[in-house]
Length: 167
Image (cartoon, rainbow, N blue to C red; front, side, top):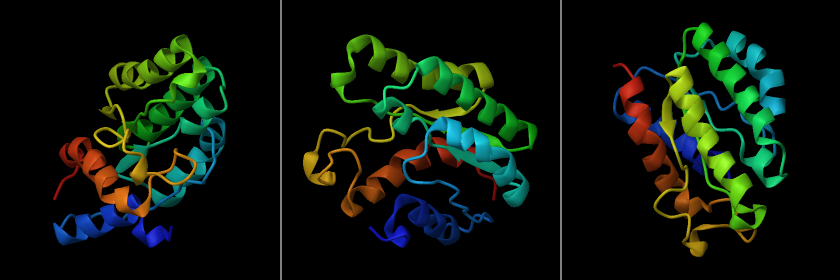
């Protein structure tokens, strides 16, 4: 899918259309874990000096079965660094497929809420809420939303993001 059709580009368009004075910098790297994000966060914050950070990492940690405690530590550090840099943070969570076992998937899903609460950041508990079960909105891997689902992703992100924005 072309980057210009993804939810991040759609976010930029909506911000402009609704006359919010923000630019969107997509610092994500496909396939990245929270360890990779942590390694890059200082440079990203320095380069972009964001007012708002949408932290949507952890999916690849979960899909690789990496320890939830390590993911939480990495995310906690990224949230803290973003806040120390003056940014308001929206933490984006998600749900894993059930094949990782109930204990792991519950610990994974709860991690996002626990982090948001302890760091007083905004939270989107599940990026795919409302359409995650609709296979026709996912690519063949059944993990990545199709182009047709990008507006739904943006709708989910917008709800907790809007209160963080200032005109």
